[in-house]
Image (cartoon, rainbow, N blue to C red; front, side, top):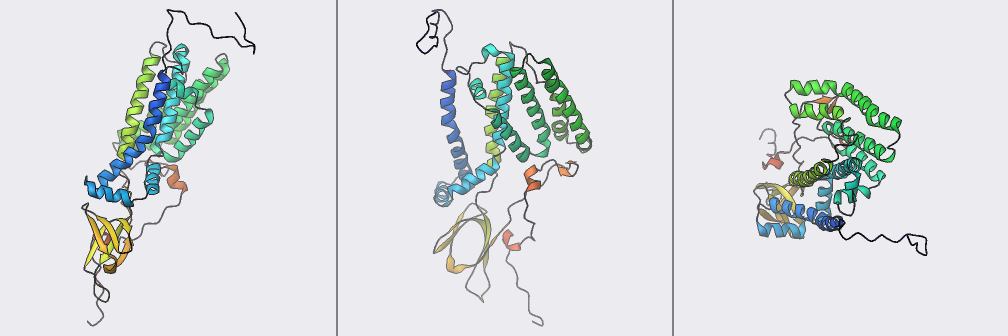
Length: 358
């Protein structure tokens, strides 16, 4: 075979009847780069459309006054958990395909293989740390399972001839981690079963045992189909769940505005709702019925900030005092102490106390 001037070998001509390489990964990458920026914009538009009660003039008013930075901040806080899920899920599926059917792991034809081959290990580690901070307690056993899968699969790919490493990190480590997890989670699993919370019991009890299942290859023939189907499921479920979560996130501050003549005359009305903006002449509020109220500033007696609706816990299960619906960030970051509810936030005027002897 002829050798080039730089010492490299020229590409061998592909036989006429040989398989052709389709640019599937390149096309998938182009579609992905097109849809990724469009998805957050679509979520923001849908949230404003829902907030305006499907009224186009109200929606256009919200678009005019609502801060884009506030929208993006709410979107980031609400969906920060989705990034680790996508990164780690893609890493597991791509690693399974790479170990089980290496001849089908072609980054030029498969978008899953393309993303897996170009995702460095530090990104997977950072995604794992972010998931440990932002996922609820009941999902942390699943995170442990995914991390153990990734460790076992990467060791099997890099050191296929090291039987000692494969045994230690692919079997012994998951067994020990599962045993420690069960010792720590056993009271919570029993409590979930007593309260009839089968989903919580499954989330706490199944992943530690399943950590041993996927640290090695699966049958070669079924690996491409199974990984592709699983990737399609993740691609369909994550946007749906993300949209459902974001549509419940508040975008405007909840306020209560007292309206009336100047003092000492009493206020005549309290308008509870969400503050859109305050101009030099008007205070614009979106009330609870979805109507836009334009309140002249000379009639605004007071304006208070109302606490947002706090999500009530659904599960009664705790893991050594850690509620399963709380995240690690909830414990690390200081939270504002709840203040006594103001009657004006529910639309009721405060009645001033009568003077003694009146």
